[in-house]
Image (cartoon, rainbow, N blue to C red; front, side, top):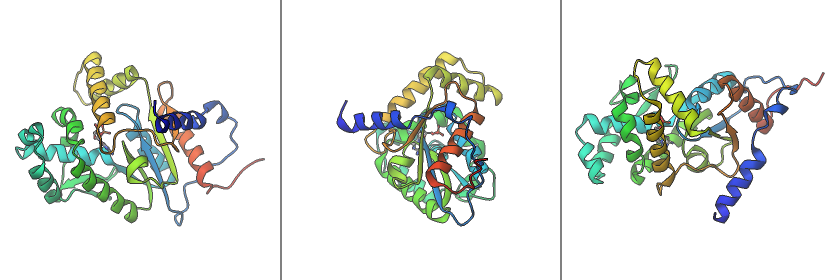
Length: 269
Ligand code: DC
């Protein structure tokens, strides 16, 4: 283990959330006041419940919600639907970048959750389909594309300075100065089970063992790429969600965010 990695691990342990301390909390967590800018980043692997808790946390605290995975998924759908899959597989990225830039990916912030648009049209469920999920990690290794996405995310951060943003590199690359950073993790088996359930709800039946294999492969690609790999930022608060409900995770995050930023009135009675 190198020094930076040790630092990450040590930092993570210091900050690991102890839920037993939350029950006795006397804090009343109010939404963040409208004049208080705060960026909260949530990173972690697939199946940790990141998107759901990010969305709920944003709603709980009155902040906007950015799903950066949707941006990479949208780019992948564009690649497949415009016949550029061969380029991606061959490692030829020029036309891919051109096409994605041309699509002018952005969000409709009136929708809840914000809907991603390409060429001004919502992509809707296309970005969640299995061919997209199967290829998105590969596309996410393209350094030039990541630079483009991070630039867009920072612009969004300027336009929406009260934001919960989730992905793989939000605390480490996109918003290194974020006020609050979280890193969510869970045991791979739990993550595979959750993903299988999620797909089952949308009518797609998948075997959990197959799901586990796919999740581990996606983790491997996401954490070993050279640009913006999945890492736990040294100053992130780590939460293992394996044995927690979504509500417990959101509550823990709200309490910790308030403790970091301190916007609520205290009720110590
Ligand atoms: O969170 P998700 O499953 O929707 O993400 C889809 C893929 O996008 C994931 O395999 C990695 C990639 N991704 C990324 O590389 N960087 C981000 N900030 C967000 C997602």
